[in-house]
Image 1 (cartoon, rainbow, N blue to C red):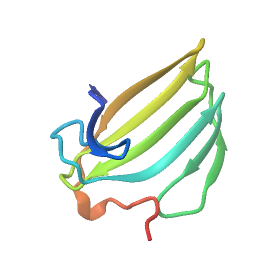
Image 2 (image 1 turned 90 degrees about the vertical axis):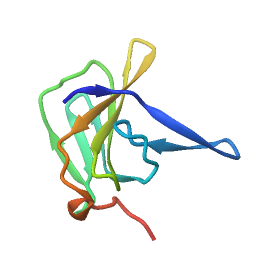
Image 3 (image 1 turned 60 degrees about the vertical axis):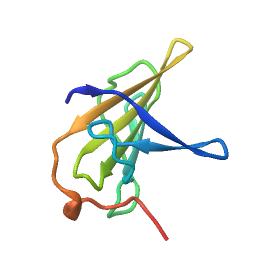
Image 4 (image 1 turned 120 degrees about the vertical axis):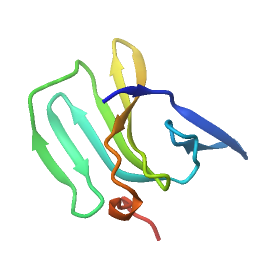
Length: 108
């Protein structure tokens, strides 16, 4: 994984679209959400029910990870981590797989 910039495009009415951090495309979808609270992990994937699991603690504060994919074929994770009164934001790349094998978390 390599760190990428977090990119937004203002769309009006106090909203912004998340852009692909690799190419800047605005066709970005949410694939899954994960909340890690000291090793107690709740994962909400795109294709199944929510999963509660345990793993070794990797951070000193809560970590929220939102896995995303772009219609451009790029995948990435937006990670928010709280530590000592500060919330950090990191964007990590994921291997490209193409939009045909990516799924949305939910949409109507």
